[in-house]
Length: 333
Image 1: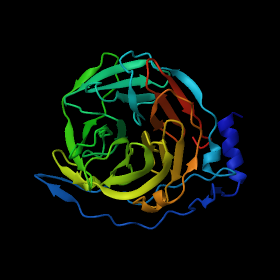
Image 2 (image 1 turned 180 degrees about the horizontal axis):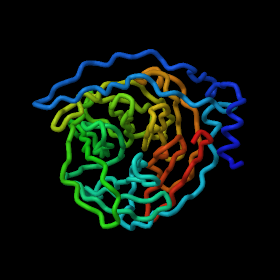
Image 3 (image 1 turned 90 degrees about the horizontal axis):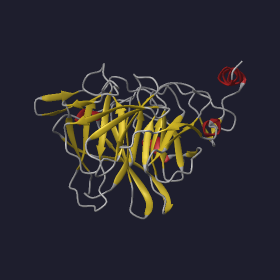
């Protein structure tokens, strides 16, 4: 019996436990009503129909965060152009494929790599960029398509009146690369202009986009939501605050992701990883809870994290030339 089968067998006889003191829900929460669709111009995007939480996994003894093992290296990024990786996300359609991008100055290029680091294509996106800082994957206008969300959300000088997210249909990985001509651009406006941010994900349950800020000297990271109904090409969407993460001085949120079912959220810093299991659709209650901690690998400049495409294990990558890909395994995968 391999480790995964053994873990599954153990879990069948283990009673539900708390995640660092917080119990897992054992039943699906009641339906939560979302706001009506917002119309911008001639295009209307409806809120996705799925508005209840996914089924949570049973808890391991000691809590979900105790189910993670120490990181291992799965490979090395061989693409010499991917030197300032600021975001990664695992494909949910193409097995063992990671999408990544460089931050400011890197140009409008998205790179595909295998989880062992093999180069699977450079894709030029027909857009201009100021400071790409994270990449996410999630639903969009076509319910049968996965979309990449490219987060032009960096603002080190705190002068931008709004930030921008570009949305493209996920390309098919191809070592020959390609050109992505069809691009939607959505502007996002904070209640007060100027926050810098490097962390973003798209909720597979509601289609909302979520951003966590990065204060200059550390402190509190504020978490905002852009409702799915407003995410249409050419729109400017007002961000709504949904939570915060108090941090020590010098600690920053540099990346974020949500697992493919929408059940678990992860943030990372340079030397920390924070994890929440989701307790409500809007995530206001989720982010009001204390996160638990999971393993964090010492990386030179760690600004990228992604759940695996089919589970709760996660990858991290650092900036720098030919960085290693680190993988933190969860027994729930």
